[in-house]
Amino acid sequence: MTETVQHWCDGKVFTGESGRTAIITNPATGEVTAEVALASIEDAEHVIDGAAAAFSEWRDTSVAKRTQVLFAFRELLNARKGELAEIITHEHGKVLADALGEVTRGQEVVEFACGIAHLLKGGFTENASTSVDVYSIRQPLGPVAIISPFNFPAMVPMWFFPIAIAAGNTVVLKPSEKDPSAALWMAQLWADAGLPAGVFNVLQGDKIAVDELLTNSKIKAISFVGSTPIAQYVYATGTAAGKRVQALGGAKNHAIVLPDADLDLAADAMVNAGFGSAGERCMAISVCVAVGAIADDLVAKIAQRTRTIKTGDGTGDADMGPLVTKAHRDRVASYVDAGEADGATIVVDGRAVQADGGADGFWLGPTLIDHVTAQMSIYTDEIFGPVLAVVRVESYGEAMDLVNSNAYGNGTAIFTNDGGAARRFQNEVEVGMVGINVPIPVPMAYYSFGGWKNSLFGDTHAHGTEGVQFFTRGKAVTSRWLDPSHGGIELGFPQNA
Ligand code: NAD
Image 1 (cartoon, rainbow, N blue to C red):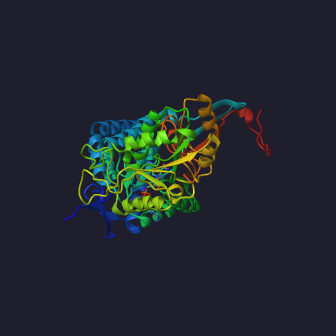
Image 2: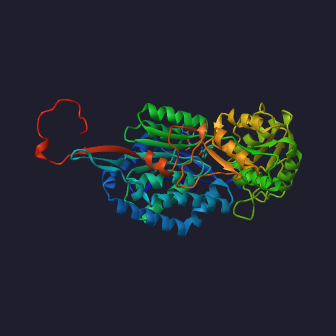
Image 3: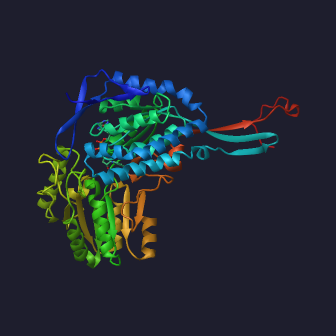
């Protein structure tokens, strides 16, 4: 009998009644390893009700006690993160070291949220008017929902839930149905850390679960991460239902290599950022923009490194694992076919890779394509696979136009030894996260993560102080303690004196 990965509600596993399931596969073997429950509207209501019931007690639990639970969760996660990494590799396919790296970056947000006491401090003005004090406080919103993508089943939820919980909200996490087990493992860890039942919940499912989260009046805010069309839909539907929404979408990240760059360092960076996690990262570099006469040298250096990458089962010694599903593998390969048909040069072809893994695994080796133009689908579309396109341009200005006219604006990088050029780039580029000789500029937990344009809908980025703002709302209090000298009738608008 295949195991069914279930929901988590009220501090324990909750078996829904929808009768609907989806399969979970191990991408390195192609085997079906389990099923995941897909919630009905009633299942979703049950989980949302659980989160709503736990809210009033959790919001009034002292900051000190909430913080203690956060510290306990951090300690358990740190001690046991290897288990979580194994779950991720088994369902997602990324290599173990990369899965561990994902958990560690998520843990950094837990560590940031351990300082919530400082982050929730309000302002206080004594004697703003005579004998009148004014102060501000930040309060939690209520039950909030997190809807996450397949590519970071631990880190992306951790961009949000540590801060949401620390601030006094309760959470419903709707993970991707492709790799849902990490969420349940984290739910058990919260219980082990002493989090009261109902504060952290997991709702497994597809569009039906998402739509209920977007429209159910008990849910007060939505943090979504996924592809741009769904992000747009989530933003429009959630805000129409009166909710606060931050919806992070897809990406097409360009790295510009200027003629004065160290080409060996730039080539290392292109390979690491292009093919790490098989390109299934929203911060992956998918376009390398080679400026001027360096293009031939740069492509040769990237090609030489690309050929050394070992593709295989992520539990072994491979550098790069499989793609998440067969359908996704075939879709990515079809973009390589289209690029070839459009006249681009396939320098390294991953379509016929001999992978060190199961014969039915979802394999596609690292693929390097040169002479790509802005009209080709391999350039215009988000491919989300191990495919690095090289576009050749003559000048910095041409490179900048390419980046700024792209519909996405998640991450970008420039490789140069010219500080003035780098400074101009950071000023002019219309992208939310910028690397200078850093190919994957994912901000630390105490800064905020998020793109511009079609890479983010909403006005707050994830984690950092923007995350604290998102999961709390401000209140300004004006107070005057009884003083007989302030009695009397005065109908005019309050003025300060
Ligand atoms: P996806 O949009 O297919 O799914 C994301 C979530 O939405 C999942 O939980 C899924 O169940 C749900 N969903 C899917 N279709 C839906 C529908 N029609 N209605 C309602 N909900 C639906 O994304 P994915 O394939 O899981 O993840 C890859 C995408 O996520 C890429 O586009 C990648 O760039 C993006 N991503 C962006 C960031 C970022 O920070 N901007 C980070 C990670 C991933």
